[in-house]
Image 1: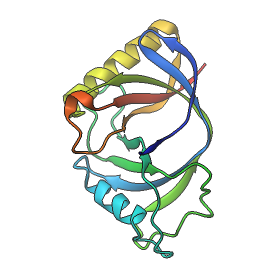
Image 2: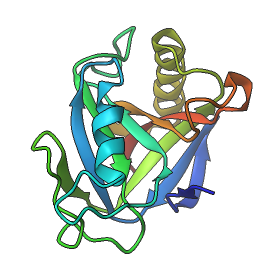
Image 3: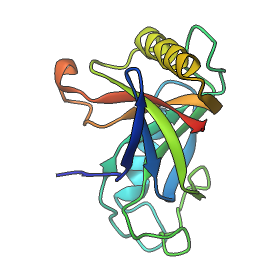
Image 4: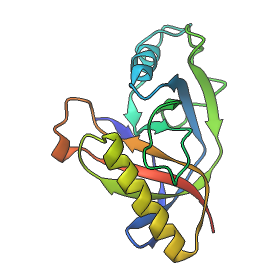
Length: 172
């Protein structure tokens, strides 16, 4: 079973859930919207690192984009990240053998997220991002940065069983 990143629910804004996340250590690569980054990250956690260690897979896989929240499509020109297991620090994470993989720490933060199922196609993600933006505006909550996609299931999971979320950091 894949471990899921822990968070604390701090409230809601319409259909958006407001969550507090602890600091996270990420393995991150550039991804041009074709999920090519997934292969690099999967190689890293299955032993393409200096220690040749296997690292347990965790959820979600985080895909960010350089397109702002008000854009009609969220795709291309972003990053893909795997969250490393709880307790692993950036200093203790195995050094990647591919210099396209970088290890980074994201400080504790508060996110607003809207959940949806399906294959997370760009048009679906854009529609959920628009709903998230609307819910935050109604609640008077300011978004910080751009929204990103969080996917929780293996690629072979049927769409109707998939858990996806669009999230954005918030300031309250």
